[in-house]
Amino acid sequence: ADGPGLIYWDGMVGHSGKNGCCVYCEVSGRRKTRGTHYYPALLKPRDRCAPGSTHNDINILTLPLGGSANYADNLYWLVSSPS
Image (cartoon, rainbow, N blue to C red; front, side, top):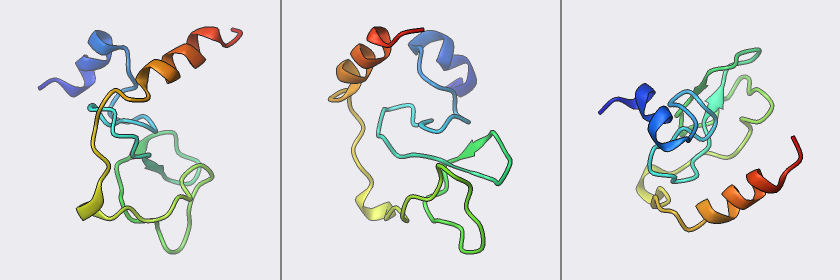
């Protein structure tokens, strides 16, 4: 699979984006302080956490399933927003 090249095919964010899950599972990534690259870290850092990455730990045994249930709503929100 070509993760970085896939963004040109499906129009979703790349593997380093905040929502970089390629199956639309809605697991948010975490970024380093003053960084722009998001990582798929399931555990919240103990000593520092950048704004937007402060969500709680994600249990690997209860990961949300991927799917397109919210895709249409999110696409409508994006298309109807002013530029």
